[in-house]
Image (cartoon, rainbow, N blue to C red; front, side, top):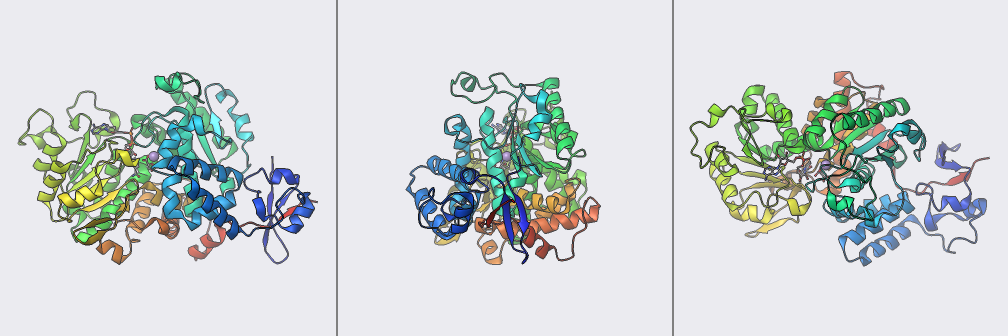
Length: 569
Ligand SMILES: NC(=O)c1ccc[n+]([C@@H]2O[C@H](COP(=O)([O-])OP(=O)(O)OC[C@H]3O[C@@H](n4cnc5c(N)ncnc54)[C@H](O)[C@@H]3O)[C@@H](O)[C@H]2O)c1
Ligand SMILES: O=C(O)C[C@H](O)C(=O)O
Ligand SMILES: [Mn+2]
């Protein structure tokens, strides 16, 4: 169904043209102006007696919506309110978000989105996105014909197995795709009408979900092996047929599947895995900012990555690229990175070592002289013996960076770097206030979920949010704008370098390694420009763009304003 067409009047002013009846306009989130339908529109669409007398401005509506938002006590209630608002009027939702991004980001995204995922079958309201499951995959071409908008350019899809740090969530993972796409629009001005969240409902291994009478997903154990691969393959090939230029973001796939799916399709459709690549880029940006702050070159650091899944390995790979740019060989760079999973330090001689961990496993000879309690070095032992200076947490293990470990890092360097990147907040490897205390305020800290700035001994330390949200919206804007055929590693590195330069000097001097969240628009635009320039360099652009990219981007951004609506004649 074509809901509307965007047109321009004789003076070049945009308006929406639709043939739908008035009542439907009040039910469709991209057409609904709520109390802002003008007198002319009310007249033209037969809404005269159906709406309140006063015609509100968008600002008045934002004020009213904000008061409503404030009236809710819990974060989950606030989330439900915002999501319902989004389903009622996208313009109002994004205008409200724009005005209060710092306050509302944690409600639509981490940490509250984790509760929304867990409670999804209880808070469900309106359909949003596409649900693909083993019962309808046979008709995938027909499903893709029925999307609410005919020009899908951007998809976030999940198989729900590794949601944030809370694991297999079955059907509820759709809430993450919705949240990520909201950020694409809020941060990078992507038109909501070209986005589509996709639920790949391939089952769940959570017995409690399967036993829950209210659970909304397919009631079966997860598809695995060939059946899983076939399912994904049918989805991707149907997408290629229907939306050949769509950018596909894989989200919260777990471990081996995350790597397999990314590799299988990254040269087939423009696609990225946010947890592997977006996270890698955002962490490299933070490390470069840390290095600027401490005046200690990246090449002199020794890294521990705690957690060797999509996030951890993605970060390791991107650090290797960062070190290569500074003149190190791949081999030397890999030797600097110690990857730790639930079994301890990953060594090359481990039996049954998963393929995606191999490139980053260390030679056993490198730990031969270490003083160890057991056969495999623990986190603490690795930090001590390898003289680690940078701790990166991507394990989802709450409190994994305890006092002993952090103090040990602080012995090895004047500027210990501690990034507790696991989400949501409850899964954070450390609490920033503790880290500052344990390091006498010397640490350079970042977290995956938002934390308040910390006051320590009279000084204020802003805690930067090291979250891929600083990468994917700008990356997507860049890819869509130049119609890039691929998402390359070079584009992610370019995004990281640009973001690292973006933190202002004052904030950096206080130890803030990422911009404040209310600068995410400007940061995303700069990321987009860097991505486009890199795409041009690598010859993967599908479109020639004008020299003044900033102006070009500015005029193509979707903005939350009510456009006039006219009846199609
Ligand atoms: N800040 C960000 O932008 C960002 C981005 C991606 C992931 N993350 C976070 O990283 C965490 C992991 O996500 P993922 O996508 O890599 O998941 P994943 O399922 O792919 O991998 C999880 C990994 O955690 C590790 N792990 C589990 N228990 C451990 C233990 N006791 N000790 C050490 N390691 C252990 C394992 O190595 C496992 O491979 C999550 O909490 C997620 O929120 C943060
Ligand atoms: O969703 C986030 O907040 C970041 C990341 O993609 C994650 O899985 O934790
Ligand atoms: Mn994720």
